[in-house]
Image (cartoon, rainbow, N blue to C red; front, side, top):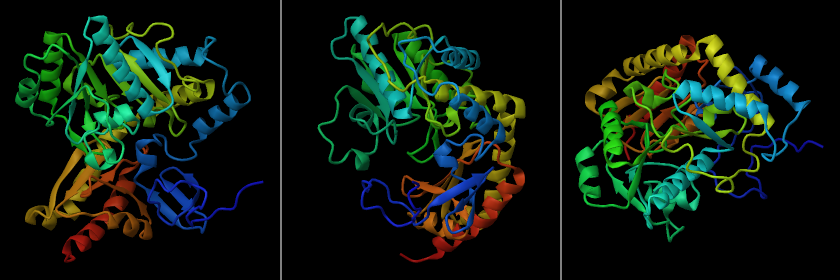
Length: 404
């Protein structure tokens, strides 16, 4: 029996999300409909998850076929689709080996375990990892400790030790914070901070981090959970800097909505884990691997990296045109990001825009209190980008004119 759809708060679900009073029933492409029949343009993409949009016919067909074969077995056995997806990620990344899990949190947790074992294997008893202000790596105790947001950490102490926090894009501060510290084993950074406000790591900083990690025998671990999988117009956002990390956590867009996480490792990190050091019951299951394989195949066939780049540029220009006055007077501080990962940084808190946009038929999110985040599916068209700007810009303008 199917439970009835309702937009009311459930008395049985833990209230961990501030949900809108909307229950979505189905979608097609970049549009979704709620249980009352209202249509929305989806500029959130499941928070950068729905790479191929909703109800993509080729993905649906592939998953339906896989359901008739195997959904789950166990990592006690070889899984051919896991080998196929791993080989493809190695090809796209220039790295060597992959561990599969189910979420970005799991992928980041595995990266931190790799860093610690890397240190222990070198005789370092208390390994330390460099992390950054405003970072977000997850909500487990370890990834929460690596995260740079006191609000999400509050109430969960004591946090895990072993992290050195520095400002983003400040190499002098990083070098000062680590000077003479023989316990440092890795730098852990998002190529573009998502939850922290869509803050890109400068390309020069990425290159400097790569050189520093090489010089000091540290692991360079780049979190591509939100900004990876073609969202910026390259497979992985760090590739704009022409570098290769040692460890790269992935998730979100990898399975187009089916939970898939991965840790891709280069030669320096690929063989740190031995049998029994790590695992994931659901990680690498046939259904998830089929989703990953088909997502990448369709992305390549349909040129979605190029689409993300061109439509992202178009959307950024449309937003700038619609907010010309606000950019000039400083009430919109900046429109930043790469490809289809954009943030509109306002001069005041703007969480009210989430509800107002939904009422106007547009799904967005607000992060870091003042930043409107747009991470739509990579199939977004230029016409749909114009529609996003046409709905959103007047809402932003109206909010900014309101007095506190």
